[in-house]
Image (cartoon, rainbow, N blue to C red; front, top):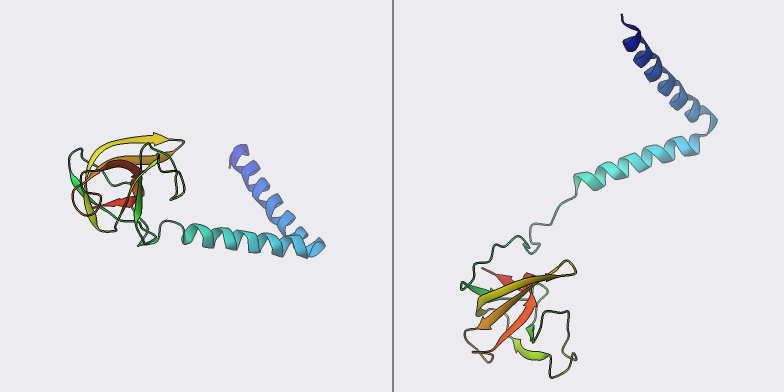
Length: 141
């Protein structure tokens, strides 16, 4: 047996004896470590997106028609420029409140501070003919 293999075996034996020693000398740390490893395993096992999570990977095609739909329910606010906004952003920033399920044509997209924004032109409904910016998450096929 080579000395390299022998040193690796000795190292594994040392780690094993240290773990057993920790169990005897300080059981709180030993069992706490086991719990942390178990929780980490559960976290990694259950990771990923839920099945109903909105898909940010939607590949948008310029000129294609998509449905404007807030994944949290309710209407979608179109803004004059790409930014996070609300109904009280100011009349100069608010373009229109689009009802969920309204078709709109995708015209442009940008990323600001890791947030994806899209510009759409509304095809029908109360906001027909108006264009504005919203979060990419508000578009679906």
